[in-house]
Image (cartoon, rainbow, N blue to C red; front, side):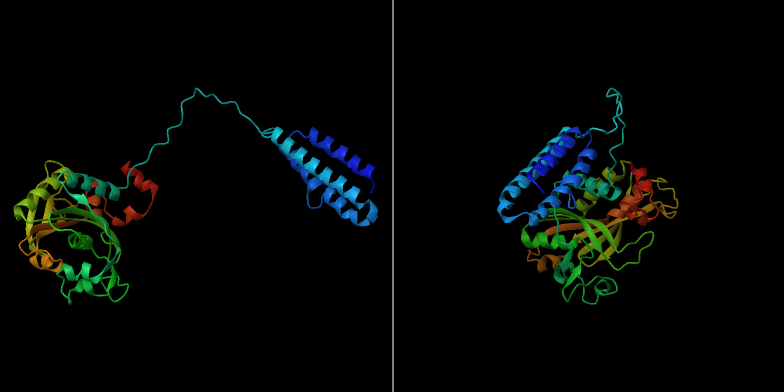
Length: 337
């Protein structure tokens, strides 16, 4: 290898690079000259055979050649960027293709609508963790030690005193422990129970519960008027509301709340099982033993209520199988656009 050979390679490389017309051609020359098995690395290895006295001159010449080739490749690559790509004429005056904006999921729709309705009545949204303590989920809610909901066959226990909440009621306990009356909250969220998944049940589901506590009198009449307003706003002004006596450990008295079937208008159909009514939620006056457990004065007044989000979504949209709400099947969900 001589200096003249290095000059010859330099002239040839720079000439070929200058003539490259496409990015592919530039890349091919990079591989040819600077690649792992390219000409320049081979020439650098040839320095081993150069006499020691001449190595400095040859080394400087090769380093200069490598730098010039690299600079020329970079410059040519930038110059020919986009060259060789097929470009089609495009008429920018044509209207765009409308792809739609999608829609909110039925479950989220019910949560947002319920939040809006109760916000009109002065309720604020409260939130809490999915992993709860036994005290918040059971003890503070006056649930007896022998109650079936405490059994491992009904509840997902994570430890001696920790579990996946079976209802959103623990959020109400947290709110009362953190704040003195008045308290006026709703608490939407996900719950977990060991239910076998079928058309109307799932191991995880959503609830929206509400709580109103005050030192001024709050009666069952206030609860009925609040829930009647909610029913008309959610289901329409013609809906009828029915209250039936029931039992819950944390309210006394307690009621089940039914709405007239919006499909058959109360005449009877498969949706309401020919009864003309659909059970929507449970409610009642907060038991004084709950107030005692959170440190409230037993002379406080309050009511609580709770409803299943999926159930309302199924009723509003005529969904017959709860599992379809979680199938993530776009063909099905497009029905709610």
